[in-house]
Structures are given as structure tokens and as C-alpha cells.
Amino acid sequence: MGRPGLACALLLAACCCCCRRAAGVPGEAEPPTPELVEVEVGGTALLKCGPSHSPGNFSHMDWFSVHKEKPTLIFRVRKGQGQSEPGEYQHRLSLQDRGTTLALTHITPHDERIFLCQGKRPLSQEHRIQLRVYKAPEEPTILVNPLGISVNSKEPVEVATCVGRNGYPIPQVIWYKNGHSLKEEKNRVHIQSSQIVESSGLYTLESVLKAQLAKEDKDAQFYCELNYRLPSGNHMKESQEVTVQVFYPAEKVWLEVEPAGMLKEGDRVEIRCLADGNPPPHFTISKQNLSTKEIEEMTPEDTGTLVLESAQKEHSGLYQCQGLDLETMASLLSDQQELLVNYVSDIWVSPAAPESQEGGSLTLACEAESNQAVEFQWLREKTGQVLEKGPVLQLHNLKREAGGGYRCVATVPSVPGLNRTRLVHVAIFGSPWMTLKERKMWVSENAVLNLSCEASGHPRPTISWSVEGTAQEQDQDPLSVLSVLSVLVTPELLETGAVCLASNSLGRNSTTIFLELDSSRSTGPRVSTASPSVRANSTSTEKKLPEPESKGVAIVAVTVCVLVLAVLGAVLYFFYKKGKLPCGRSGKQEMERNTSI
Image: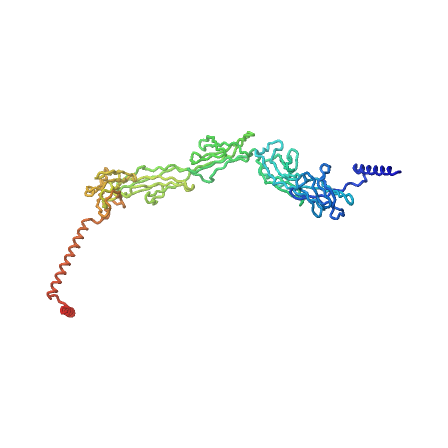
């Protein structure tokens, strides 16, 4: 065979060998598995052309990226110098480790592919590298179904949606209920997942959990878990736990009363209708009168609560709640519960307007109704002193001072805070009794003065004044009156004073107010008040202020004393000069010595 024939035979054998390799003929050598390089998004991939112990010459080689089995030249190495080819990798490639390593920076998901290097001398070499790219997803978010789920649903209903953003590759999602993973279950649990490829090449995963729920799931905690891989290993992230609102019909209705325990009139009472359904049924409340057996329908608030702001005895009765489920139209009744409002009626006192002559006697009787045992006691109004424990108060040998207020108190010991009181005024017949008989006060001329006068008696007295002015009366109690007179201090008023006259059908009495001008005070117009400071009967008098006449007498007495002393001194001096006043020897010698000098 000649040379051309030999060449053709060799070429044919080579072609057949290539065809068998391409077709995967059994027994022929397969291409070596690519070297795996893993890197996170944003990192740098170090691509080595063969194992570190490879003896190849790296001064002359080409690098390719293989996408869809099509190699594209991206980098050339000539004599140890690298040069990027125009394209997507032009500005991200560089040589490291004396040309044995190609560094690819700013890794993105689009870089996940096979990279191939080929050496030219001394022998043709080829090495494949599989680049795997990873990116941890963001914290998963979970959105619960805002409409809730009915237990009457015949098929699985959306419970919640789990979203994991910007991960690579697509993470795996697992759903949990109360810490237990959920699996697909026909007609019970269905998990539907989808993903979106962002422009960055990252994935956003959305997973919807659908399930049929029961009443027991009303407090169930749901959450999702994302499982993903990084070069460092396997990882996971969990969402927050959520609770979905579960709707289920009520099976029981009951009634509660607040406050618990003994109730009394005036208490704020709440009658609550409750049920174990969600949403609660529509409530109505009925009350049966314990005496007449009549039934009264009541409409509570939307919350099923009936509020008695101030409970009265009429609110007592048997109460019952009725709940109507608006979805199933089923009606449920609670047990009847008695509401007892304890009470004490208004107090009656007889006689209603007690009165007596001085020295006489009175019997005061107190009555009240209650559904509980009542205790009575009588108190003196102005002192609070307990006079009698019981409904009847006996008063004997009455004096004027016995007139005034007496209070009957009716108490229910078995119900704390339940009591009633009634005040009655005892009147003792008599002429007016003045608080003060007379009063003196210092005033300034032209001042406006308020004069007060108080009197009591039965019948109630009337008050008049001896001077002109503006008078106002105030009732202190049913038997007493206070009169206040506003007057201008004039010379005539200073001279006459003012008389307050109280009178009734049994007599009259008066209080005299004396006014004295105080020269040490300012004469400008001002307002002064003369009011009683202590109570006294008609014969008592207030301690008098010093009178001007007593001041004059004292001045005269002092003047006379001074004159007498002056005359006495003159007489003694006269006798002394005449030598008729006896003196001691030493004194006389001293006087003679002074005379000779």
C-alpha cells in the first residue's frame, strides 16, 4: 500500500474512533468527570487547569466557557501572558498562581456552567471545570389567609403563603403545624409551589399551603422552612409562626353575671352571654319574673352583654341566653340563672313632722321593707351619737335643746353596703331663741358693713331690722334662720346701733349690735362683717369690749395722781429749806461742807 493509501487508512480509523466515542460505543473511554468548583454569588471562582501536580506547560493555553454544549473562547495565554476576549467575561478574568489559575470575579447565577482549558505544547491537554453557584435566600415571609377558614369546607382551603426571595438554586420548602412537618394528603393537605426567575438570575419561591381544618386547629401554629445549600454545607431558615382564624359552630351557650356574689340596688351589673363557637352566635336574653312568671325579651349589645348601670329590685328574675347561628340557623339555649337584687325600700318615719311642747315626750317609729333581715338604729344628726338600736326612739322631758335633726338608719347586715337613711326634724314649741343677745364691734365711718343675726324657734321665726339696708335670709335648718344686713356706717348708725328682731306666734326676741368708731383705722370705704361666733340662748351675752367711758376715767385718775405727787414734792422741799425736816448727822455735815465751799 502506498503512502496515500496509508494516510487514508489512518484518517478513516481516526474518524471511526471519533464516531464510536461520540456514539458511546461500549468499551470505549468516556470523557473525564468535570472538576467541581463551588462559590457564592458575588464571590471569586478560582479555575485551575488540571490538578496541582499536573506536569503540563501552562504558558500557552486557551480557556473556553461551554454553554449549551457550545464552547466559546474567553481567554488566551501566550508565553505566560493572559488576554481576555471581548464578551461578558472581558473585565472579570485574571491570571493567578504564575498562570496556573484563572480567577473569575463577581460571580452571578449566569456563571453556572462548564469552563474548559486547553494546553497547546508540548502535548495537547484539556481540562473541564463545573462551576456551581449558590445564594442563600432571604428570611422567608409568611402571609396568613385574612378571611379565615370554615370547618364546614368540603375541600382544602388556603391557610398561608410562604415566600422566599433571591435564592439560588431554588430552595426546598417544608410546612409545619405545631412543630410537625406536613405532607401531601389527598383531600386534606395540598402544597402548591411556584418560582419566579429574577433578572439577576436569582429565584423567588412562593409556596401555598392548603388544608382542611377542624375546631381543634383554632390555636394551631403554622410556619414554613426553607432548606438550601451553600459551599459550606446545608442550611435552613424558618418563618414566623402564624395562627389562622377557624370558624366553627357553637355547641354550648352559657350565662355569666359580673360581679359575682350578693348584689344590691345601685350596683352596676353585667349579664354576659357566651358560647364556644367562632364567630359567636347572635344572642338574645329573656327574663322571667319570679312572681308573675311573665317573660320579657331583652336585646344585649353586639358582644352579647346586657349592662344594668344601676340595678333595681325589678331586675331580679330568671335569666336565660339564646344563641342563633346565622350560618346553620341552629339555636342553642343556656341554663337559667337567677339574678337577685337585694334592696331596702325608702324609710317611713312616724310622725313625719314631730313636734312637742317643752317638757313633753315624743315617740319616733322607723319602718322599711327589704327582702333580707333589716336592723335599725337612731342617731343624733349634729353629733352622730347613736341614741337607740331598734326602730323606735323614745324622747322624754324635752327641752329646747332637744330640737333638731334625728336620723334613722336601716341596714342589711348580710349584704355589705346595703342601707337606707331618713332624716327627721323634731320641733320644740317656743318663742324665738337668739344666737347672741348683744354684740359690740369697732368700725370705720363710711364703711359698708354686713351685720348677721341668727334665730331659731318653733314656729319658725321671722327677722326684721331697726335700720335700713339690704337684708338676705338663709334657712339654716327647718327651725332656724340667718339674716344678713348690708349697711353703710353713718354717724346716725354709730349713735343708734342696730337691733335684730325675731318673732313668731309665741313671742319675740332681739339681738342688739353696738357700733363704735375706731379712729386708728382707715376711713376709706370698705366692707366689714359682724357675724355670730358662738351660739347662746336669749339670756346669754357676749363678752363686752372695753367702753370709751372707762378709758376717760383712767386718764383723769392718772392726771390727778401726777398733780398730787407734784404738790407733795414741793411741800417737802419747802420744809427742808427751813431746816424743819430732820436729817442724819452725816447728811447734815455733808450739806454744811458743800455750803462752805
